[in-house]
Image (cartoon, rainbow, N blue to C red; front, top):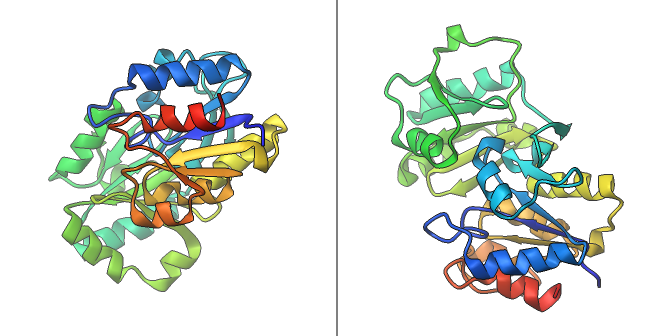
Length: 269
């Protein structure tokens, strides 16, 4: 099985706990690219939160891509131009904003380049998201929002116990109509029903003419499950949640142990 595309989650996978790409990981990915393998960052982050790492890995050619917002957008790596997209509308935004108020949890929504919250008491995890990714954060009441906006994703965010309580109260229709998954103990991500990282990787592989069996994916959280299931070779990090390790074909080292480099060396180099 010749790997032609490597899809890599960022936080907890590509990046160590200090949000850095280690020299060993960079060296392995550079060597894979030298062999003609597509290296694609597949993340829940917006494009602005990916750019610095694309530069560090020199993934900035005309034929390079990245997958953002958990598969909602497939973008050109060089300038963020959108190639493929599946987004939510304003009615979807309103539906989950009302549920978040009922459940007593914080809420946030992303358009293509801005993070919005309707919470005057802006949640600390919303601030954390903005600081971590560099995306501008704006408070906007529901009434002030533009009803023509499209949203790659909306989120409920709060303390883990409070968020888990909200998740347990989500109506069945929400699970039926949307893709809903946790990307961290304090982040619940809500996307278009057709969107997940697996769909994003599949769309890009088809766009590049790469067969499913020639795709390798690496991840650590629940939002990585779909792409681990899609890939011909699914690799879970040593620090991955148990559910991901159960479905992966291989478990590599943790993100503190250059796990991405180990897997790339083993299966690609």
